[in-house]
Every structure is written in C-alpha cells, then in structure tokens.
Length: 116
Image (cartoon, rainbow, N blue to C red; front, side, top):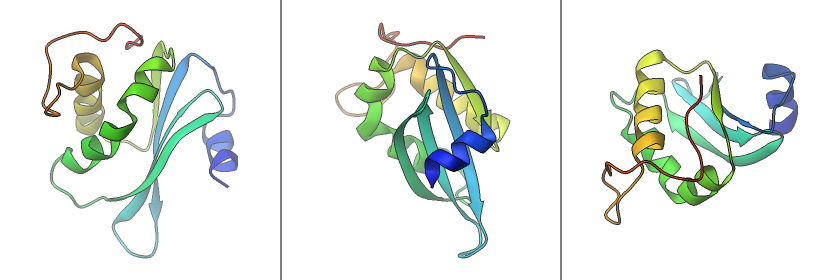
C-alpha cells in the first residue's frame, strides 16, 4: 500500500533521490504517516503527531534509520506535503548527522548528501 502511494506521489522514482512525504490521516485527526524512501525502497513508514510544535518527533523517528539513510547513496531530496520549516530541520540533521548521544554533530556524512 505504501509503495502504491509513493508511486502516485512521486511517479518517477529516481534511485538517487530520498523521498520524504507525510500522508495526513483523517482519523485520528491531526496524525499522519511519515515515509522515507530512496528510489523504490521504503526505509521507514511511521505515524507522527502533526500537531507537535517541533521537529523532535520526526527527528526521533529518523534516528534508528540513520545508517540506512546515509548509506543509501541519495544525492537529492524530494518532499511531499512537508512544511518548509520541517524540511529545513530534516536537512540540517541529514547534513550534520548524529553524535553517539544523538545530538547534532558538525561533521558532514560521507555516504550521502543533499543535492539541489
């Protein structure tokens, strides 16, 4: 089901693109499904509270999948239904990475990157 949804949202799936989308759910209200995929491969799909006032919930969902995301070889990011402020926070995290205690690192990861 997720693959079909991603196929409709991103009709041409490029293996060098990290696709990030939020599908809003009607019930329960103000919840959605956050999907991360590279090309046609789904990295993770998790429910997220859309009323959360910060990016922490999304960043926490990304943390366990950090190595998979970075080793995927993505060169650019495509968003669907993701607010610009959240896109900025996601890109900061992807660019800088995590330290052992899951705080921001100032190092640039070698396995992936953010393209135009």
